[in-house]
Length: 494
Image 1 (tube, helix red, strand yellow):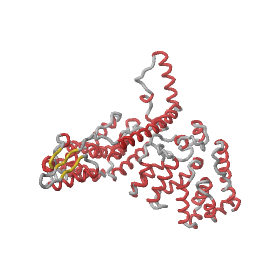
Image 2 (cartoon, rainbow, N blue to C red):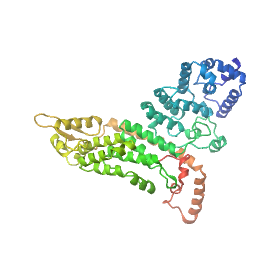
Image 3 (cartoon, rainbow, N blue to C red):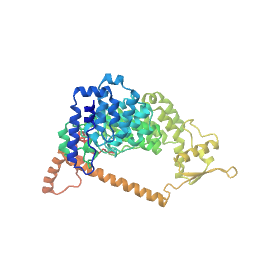
Image 4 (cartoon, rainbow, N blue to C red):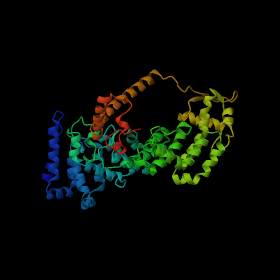
C-alpha cells in the first residue's frame, strides 16, 4: 500500500519555467509507472481507496486521482463495499478541481467518468448537469469545440428540466469539430507540440485520439442543436431557439438526404419564426434545394398556419389551429401552437406602429383580435393588461398612459432610440472582444484548413491555373469542398 501511494504521489509539481518537452516526458513516465503497478498494490489500494483519495490533491495530481477513481469503478466488489457518499463527494471534488492540462493525457478515462455522471443515476440531475457543464468549460474555456459530452449535457438538461447550469455551455457558439482519429500519431502529425504546451488551442488536444471526446456523426450535432432549441423554447427565448433550429435545418446534407430531426425542426422553426418576427420566416439562401422541397411538402400545415398568422383572420387562425390539434399533438408542437395563438394579437398591436405614433386603447381593442377566442377583447381593461405585459417583457417599445377622464393611450417608442454614452461604450467593448475572438478563431480554422489534403490539392491547381489565366476572384475553395469534409476540423456555419 505504501509503495503504491508513493508511486501515485510521485508526480512533481508544475514549474512555470519548466521546458514543455521535459514536462511531457515526466507526465508520460508517471502514467507508465501508475499503469504498471503490481497486482498486489492495486488490491491494497482497493482495500482502502479513501486513504489514497485523501492523500492526493486533484488540482495538483489529477492523473493519480483519476487512476484511483477508475480503479474503484472497474471493481464491482470495491464499489459494493465503499462508502458511496464519500466516493461521490470525491468525484464532485475531482470534477470541480481537476487540472485541465493533465487531463489531456488521460482523456478516455476522464470521459468515462463524465459518461457515468451523464447517465443521471449516479448523482442527482441538478448536480450532474452542473458538473458536466463545469468539466466541459474547464477542458475548453472557449466552449467552441464540440464533443460527445455536449450532447449528453443537453439531453440530460432537457430530460431532467435542469436548465440554468447548462446555459453557459449551450450559449457558446460551436465553431469547430474535433478530429475523428483514434490514432495518436495522426494527432501528432497535425500538431507535434506536447499536450502540456500552454499555447495549444482546444482543437489541438480535443480529439478521439486524446479520448476527450468519443466519435460521433453529424446526427449528434443535429440532436444537440435540437435539444438546445428545446431549452430556449422552454425559456421563451425565441431568438436563440430560432438560431438553434436554423442550424439544424440548414445543416449540410450528403447525397440529397434529409433526416427526420431536420424535418421536425423545420416545423418548429416556422412556429418560432412567427414568435420572433411576427410573420413567416424565410429559409436562408444557403439552404440546399432538396431540403427546401422536402420541408415544403412535410410542413404544409404549419405553412398554412403561418400564412393565417400574417393576416387579419383571427377566427380562421383559431379554427385552423383547432383542426390540426391531432397533428400538433403527434409532432409535439401543441404548446408552441398555443404560444403562436397567444402572440397573434400582440404582433397586431406592434404592427400598429406602422400607422400610429399614438393610439387610444379603444382603437387598439377595435383594430386587433385575439386568436385564442377569434374575437376582439371585450373591455379596454383587458387591452391595458395585455399591453402592460408586453411592455414589461420588452416585447413592445412604448409607453402606456392611463387616464380615467381623458382616456388611455399607447405611445409607441422610437424604434431606433439613441444610446447613452455608457451603453455605447459597452457596445464598443463587447464588439471589440468579439472581433478579437473571431480573429483568433479565423487563424485557428485557417491553420487547420491548410493541413487538409483537399485544400492543398486545390491550392496547387489554382496556382497552376493562375499562372496561365490569372486569378479568378469569383471561385473559391469553399465552393468546391465536398459535404463529408465539412465535419472534420472545419469551422461550423451559422
